[in-house]
Length: 339
Image: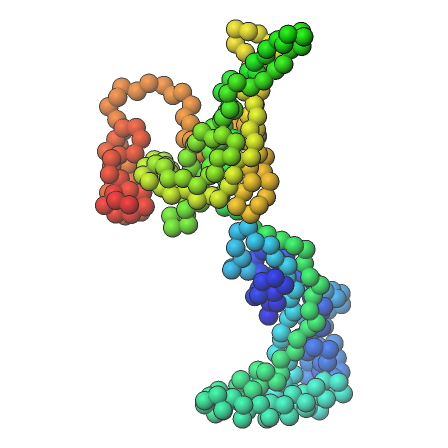
């Protein structure tokens, strides 16, 4: 099966499946009726009177698709003509073929003989040259499919909205009696960038206070949960390169209600990501993910402080002692506890 690329070459994961025309394994020809497995062929022998669909669903995968890029795909099928087998003793006798299949096989065999010198010139051994010539001559290809819709893999980097501290606007009364409202301080809030670490196949979060115009490229100490042991590993001086820009922030304004326990408007962050996409993150929508990646723990009953059993070694690391958090020196990503 040969996958064709639109903007990308090769078969595709990002591209959807195509509906390929069912030309049949014989590419339109077939065995003539009245001999051997003819008279309806293999489909009749196996399926009886079952209706054979005109189309076949083809599913293909693109393992080279990159996050953030967009693709369109077209495919076609390449099949070896079963009426012209390269295996000695399995050839279909020419007298059993109908006129169309007979003409096609004769053309293939003539073409195959012409192709053998080409492969010998490429330093193929005689047997290999014949096999390659047969493969090329006897390959039947369908027409190209219609192009798929534009498809893409989303970026593996993420952003989650935290809160914006109380930031009530102030007001001043002018001499003409008009009241003007203004912000005395630049609004800021907590945003949680989460970078994907391909080397360790984990998401690396780091909550950060941001302003309008903040660029999400920085170096900081990050805490990462080991995906198997769930111990927390500190990664000092981790290089976050999300190439994203905080465009706007709002929230933190007092809502109408009780003055004893005032409610604040939820935070929203407008971000332009590395692909130039405009993304808006909401504190309400991101609440669960924000808690998950900041390793927020619900209140748990107090223990006697004796600690628990030693943790299992992570991916080659030694087991740690009991107690809360990750034991010092335990490296979830490798032996010896070092980075």
